[in-house]
Length: 351
Image (cartoon, rainbow, N blue to C red; front, side):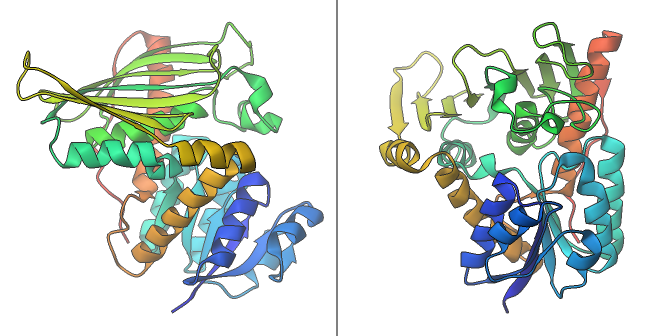
């Protein structure tokens, strides 16, 4: 069966989502909604293009992708669930944890899939790191390092992406939201957050530009975290996972991996480096959007599989989206109070 999917929001990401849906043999683009008529029409192709949610939801569909500004996610998602539709929502899932909980509650009540667009899970360097850990090549995970940053406000296309309250916060809700998700992806969950946040560089009220933290999993495994808008090298996201038998690093940009293994601590080490020259060439010719498009294709396939009752591969669900925003809020609360913030364990969200 072909899944009919509508897209809400036709900016850069929404257009990529619409192209991915239209080109997949398992999905059909049902409609595109954006308040800017020209944007909706350019993304829709031969599908209907509309300017408001009432007109959008009047078209028959099975699921929606929400790629509108973050403070508009909740309304669109709750309306979709009320109509019995499945939802794939861009990250951050919403701009407050309270709003995210209303979205997960609506998904649970409707018994529909709520997925969140954490497409970094599908980057080749991150997939390689996850597969290395799952294969036991570095032994049991001992600790994790998470880093994400760029060089500031010039990287944003619109004010709502970095100004609170629409954005939710600053670096922790921007590049940091990916880090929180990767922390949960590799640790299993994050249930304790201790951190320090500051906003002295860009001085945007309510939006921190640097955040440092330590996370703990329910099993007591720790992770260090830094999200920053003051990174002199420009954009980079990296995760390092350490075990008794070695370490694996996955990073972007550029896309690359390092795997270090040994038979036991102190034994001779073997180092494997993976570079992705084909991705570097493709991005030089066609931009970062070419890599994002490929990750969207894989994510869409997992979303369709989840709708069909399958496991959904690497797909992030609504509880992954909720926990990432809870971590952002907990980090900032920890910075204000000077103490660790504890979060209850949060399992997967399934229909």
